[in-house]
Amino acid sequence: MHEERPESAGPPGAPGSQWRHLRPPKDPQRLRARAREARVLGAQFSQGLNLPNVPAVVGLVAPVDVSVRVDTSPHPTPGPFMVGDLEGETETMKVVVDPRTGEKVVQSTDPGARSDDDQRAETIRLAFSLVRAGRTEELREVLGQGVLDMDLDRDDKGNSLVIIACQNGNKKVLKELLRRGADPNVRNSAGNTALHFLFSYGFRELGEYLISKGGDDTVQNNEGLTPHEGLSRAEVEAL
Image (cartoon, rainbow, N blue to C red):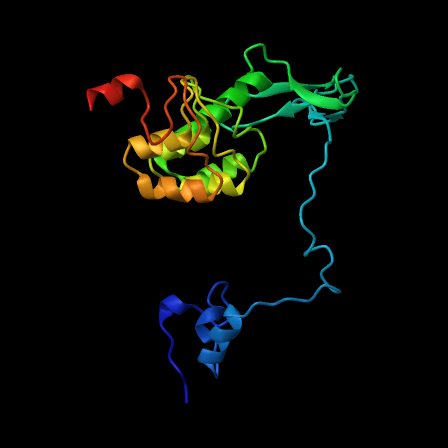
């Protein structure tokens, strides 16, 4: 039986027409699945395929003749840098010998950098601010740095951290300071102790607690008044 073909198809051997005579695959689903499968030879067969790219310095490439020219000029050795903020300015540091201890320490070469005294003063201001705000957890972290002296470091009126805590009636902060060994009987510039403020400000229950922890209610201030008598003569006379 003679099979007729369209004239446009051309003879069976015509170039570009062989695809018309291909038989459909027996299992088209399997063919599509195999086309999507990942083919991995394994590490022992693909040593050159599984290795990561390793950068290497090859020098400068001349755009005219595409040759390689190695830069042999000496480069200065970079000095040490300490970056506090990746988006900020870089601060140059240098190693010096501490004349007091003879040990090597890192010091900033920036003339505008803060000194150790400035950083300590800022830490003290932060501690007093945290005590006033009653932020015990953050205060604990600052005290853990070992920078502050809870009895000797004072504010502008001679108040210690214990006195500030008692002025605000904050028992939680007071307990944290006492647990770390703070003196409950420190006097400020007017001679007043923490107990003077507790009884004058109406925190009598907290005052009794402080007495149980070593607070002395017989200490007199600069005007000769005990905590039970008040902060100043003017206040006593005004009653």
